Image (tube, rainbow, N blue to C red; front, top):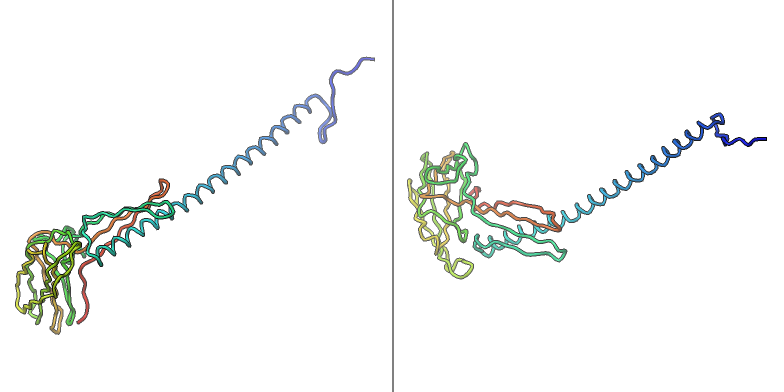
Length: 256
């Protein structure tokens, strides 16, 4: 009796034949491929999730480093009158590093209404409207700022107004007031305020509208007029970088 060389094993749902062996092989390969594909997808998702978590962690470290630079620079500039040309840099205990660059801000506070969208200067004066009983004050006390030598102040209406110039001589490093502030009063306009000694003195200009209706006042400096300080800080950690910007105005309006 001859042996059947074509071996065949029963496969569920298929009749026993040589073709069934090929189908079984295909099904096996499909199952293995599906399992491998699923494994690769899960691995890729896990890897990307890990990258996201790590990136968020180091990015947060960079953010807090930049925030630290802002706070340190603001304190040094407003409390210790540090020179705006002295950039700040350092590192935190978590390995993040920070830097801060400081410049003076001469941009128009409200372009289109008070002045054009250009630096405040003799060709782009600044007009401030004060309601009755309102006051305006501008501090010229940024150490290292290039102030104009004079500022002309004119009045649009005729409301009774006080114009007060405060001045103090400075000394030390960083500069600070070494004597009590002196005050000079004006009640007529226009007035030209002499600020040429800004390298040795700090100045404060205050305008009080003592009238019963609103009035407006225009400041025309002889050159660009710094109105505040701009701090640009960056914090980095493991090639992740965060940047923050803060503006510190040196002027304000308030009631009197």
